[in-house]
Length: 258
Image 1 (cartoon, rainbow, N blue to C red):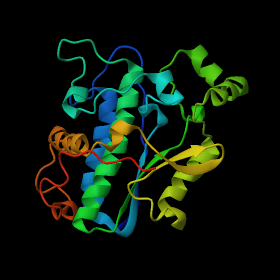
Image 2: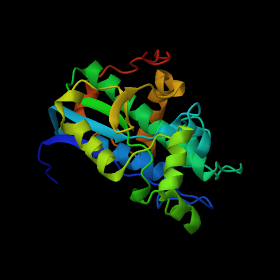
Image 3: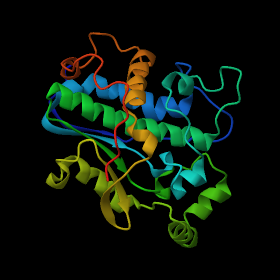
């Protein structure tokens, strides 16, 4: 199949599955399969079609950070171990909660964005890799697996006001959607590779992600494990990334930006 040159890729699909744990057709836990592996495979299959100066935008979430109110409300993210997350609940141990699975998937998404940025820079490829948190946007239907009463409450002005006062990162369908589009086309974000932006109080703000998200060693392992899980063949690996030296930047932890 021929694919025309691309100016960018928006990796925006996301889902939160509450209740009993479920698995994809490949046998992988559904949250991780949807939010992480699907994006990862699509990215690798299309990256060589992205033109110089193009951008990759990963839709992230403040829920990945346990030190924020977003993370505290959902559940503490687990270790970004792709093999363990893909087979969560299949090893005889109690599975993670739905909130933890979601938060962990978003931690992995941010680590993908940072790892891709490092690999592209190492290979000398002028493509930006950006992580973007649109904030909580109840209109998207992300909460559709929650009880009906909870869904109705989340859409009320009072509850949204209260969550904002509590420190939850809030977005809106219009502003966050426009923000996502700006991430990929606005010249203001052309130098945003390897950075994390949030939709907050009507602004798009560069901010710090969780400390765990800057671990280069774990990000490299997450990437390599994900390649194996999606069964990416040597012929499917992007030529752009094959230029990067093997074993780049492994075993060290990156200092978070200030």
